[in-house]
Image (cartoon, rainbow, N blue to C red):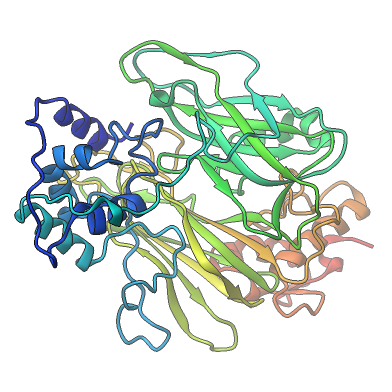
Length: 500
């Protein structure tokens, strides 16, 4: 549970006087006409009976009882949790007007909504005319917010979580036992004890990869290569729109990479994953990539240390969502795009105040065009100083690692390829995906080396001329490029790989 939610839950247990509905003027802000809508649009999804919030905010009585607390957290911007800064319009003329957020799941309150909350409290918290109440929203019963799953895949047995210390990642393979490829339009991960689950990454492995121990080991230790679905604080499910799906291959297995964090009490967890299928082949196959920098090194005491990475786009694509990932020293994150042919560089997502406890998925209202040859830049800032209350040890140099007191620099991107055929074999699936590094996989005879070259060409050949020029490769890979460039002409071809 989010620490603030726990604190608020404790505050909410204090005895409160029964709410007294004050008479309202005709033009006064009322609960029925104004406040109920704000709560419903931004808070009730979590703060309701059966929701993940520690108390409900779905009635006049419950909102009135916690009115002062609501004013405090909304004015401070702590609640509802939303950390994206307003983006400028297409001409760079300042933030977009209210109501024009590019994010479909934007729960931030406008200045007008915050003012209404204050005005309502200062007016005595009038209830107003109940006929003005918005229609109540229906939510699925139980834990499944995606509706009743068509299939549920659960860990075969509970994982025992110790009370103290750290635990290595758990990598658990669960066969799906499905005979044919299935299209998945909604996914949700439900732990049996969410208090100890830091994050979960799930990889959908085809039958061959699932039987390969080395492939399973590599994927289970690698958060940077994308995922099939994920669970992090603030994000346990997704539902794709019409015409979109992820593939679950026939005879596949789900590899669960689970990071448990002991919290002082020994317990156990046997999480499960539910999916909703669609029978129609989608128009677009949803994939995940990432901007990553494994070489991060954050000096002791650094208050605003910067790290960056980039991802070159190998085909015309459209971005659907972003999800940055850092640990407790993470301070801010920014995605930018550099368009090809001198098209300029602009902001895609700016998170000036990153919160490890709420790792949100930022869903675009409309897919974003990303032409071949574009470069997605990710920039992260870290606070390794004593001013960071979550910092485990400001005296340490911090590098990439899996535990919370290590760090990561990851910018996940969900996307689809324009003019792709979703029914073809997925050559970007885990186990066969081209890596973001050069070299490796260049052995195994001429045929194998030819396949390795083709995978690299698909990733880095921005102008699609059948070869890889050094300028098409990120600078941090130039040393590996030079090792592979046998002819020393600044171009990689099949001949450099000794391939037929």
